[in-house]
Image 1 (cartoon, rainbow, N blue to C red):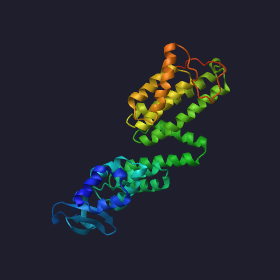
Image 2: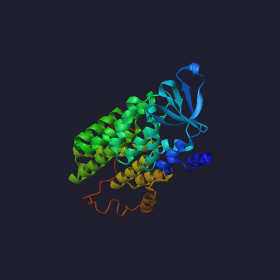
Image 3: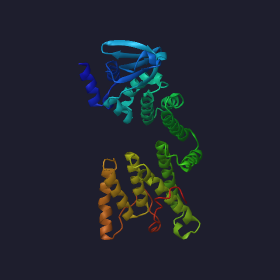
Image 4: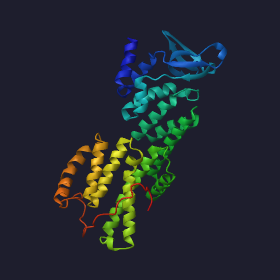
Length: 344
């Protein structure tokens, strides 16, 4: 029965696990973990099922026998991972929080022990909490790992998570101009080891630049004839596009953000009545990220766009119905500087 329950945990995946089910899986854990003695004279490493970390030591089981091994007798540990546990770490979502919290609370006292992977569960929990806007709880966990984990690489990842959470808090509390200043400073550092933060700030700045583009055009209907306004408008245009295309160009495996960026690029081209480029970017979206939630809207939009291109007639409503019409056509925009991110 015990082996069947463990197998069920592995096959059904951790995403569906409740806190009680995760607790039972730990309590019935088979001998997946390895423990090395702090004193080599006590013998070679041995395998056991580590159930949880208690204040006085690790509670473990070997067969039907349970015991608590004091921390001062442990040289290092190595947690084995079931399929379900791997999935828990990889899929940090709201529904994984109960099970992740069980694993983190059962293991986090071991983060200073060489070989412990408790920090991986903690970081997954912090990411999942961030997705549910529980920022303070996520920050507390990330900081504990950033300043206490035995592994330098994991400490670096945790520190990156604290930076991402810190910027989210700035977005919620600081004045808009201060938020924008901080966001541009982050892009100038181009810290590619923290993809979460870069995707967050580029998405934020893209919306700011697109809004600024539309405002400049609304304030200056004859912007194409104004030598002072035209460069400002084109700078906002290029920046908005560069920022929208950033995820798919630099982080294509981040499927949700990349699809969102391509959809936003399509909206920018749609705003400027550039039907050919709208079609091209929407086709990229459908070819690369067919599972995106933008798929249905992209397919629907492509039908009139392609008909417009084939008939050589302008699209009837290239802009949303609630947007005012321009006093005169703007003409095609200059080609986007797709690979010169953030340059004027």
